[in-house]
Length: 151
Image: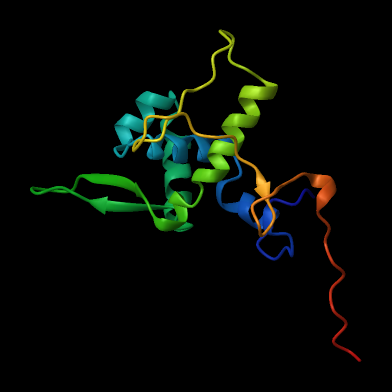
């Protein structure tokens, strides 16, 4: 039988994918970053089936990526807002967007023009850096062997 969950995995990537790993979940998080908060607006913006949207919103709330907030003055009206945990996905989403623009560009060839709100300047390319800020590639890093506590 295929494995469906990785809650007990030692791999942090596998555990993270449990929470936001399917494409609908990440697109919902992206829409929330754009300011979408209401169920009907997520449904309209994404063109997602209602049952899938309900499932993904519930999972994102359960995993504390989004918070479901009652904003109704007279009766229940809910909004979905990013939590600190959800906002911390911002560099992940930007890195995926930049990777997609490079390797699978839009049919019209234009990349999303994200800009710094304070300066109006385009944002830079995401990269991994060392402790001094020097960019690193996958060839520049390694996983050290775990320390042996038996001796």
